[in-house]
Length: 294
Image (cartoon, rainbow, N blue to C red):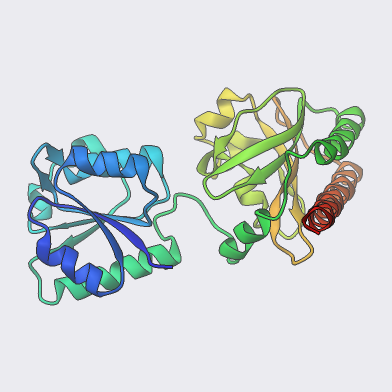
């Protein structure tokens, strides 16, 4: 499948043609408004823009991208020198800068697009090495199925009964956000992956324990966790049969706390059972679909 690139520039013909000739699916925009409209209706793999647009700047476009599709790679392809670019309002914005007037600029642009899309190097959080396979595996599961929910509910209820914490839930990590199921102690809305602890937990081979988020450099400045009153966390990855981590079985508390070896062992067992239930329900759903299709 071709990589889809949004290219914004009111004098864009040569660059757009070069990218199209390289096999990219190029969506052209002549202004900030036009580019913003394209983002609202089209899923793109990369955004390339000039700095000066008739109704704004490329950095304004990047800010919009980060609000709507935070993992999308962004490249500022311009003849404007970095010393002339006003970045005061866009501190912390992750993007690549590539001068458009250098020799072989179009070839370098094509290579940079390929590198950023392939490596996801502008994603603001760590990814598993098997992220593409993990997401493909996740599509085979219907976690919202009523029977699946009931099975997970029983496990989170057990954890909440035997371990003294505020919240217990099963977190499932999609491409850009984490969704929370079978919550005990609070109903949780989806959260961007860069703000979730489970983003880190699925990278671990075993249970991840954080006794105090304020003492952990990964989470000490995470406002989303503070809003949710999460100060301590324990999470065990939910592995599918192929080894891909679909999410985590998690417990959190509003106070710093340690977890005993017995508690960690219990959480590990509950996570393994949750993973087995997810796979069992997946197989049952697949078998039912096969019967219905005849």
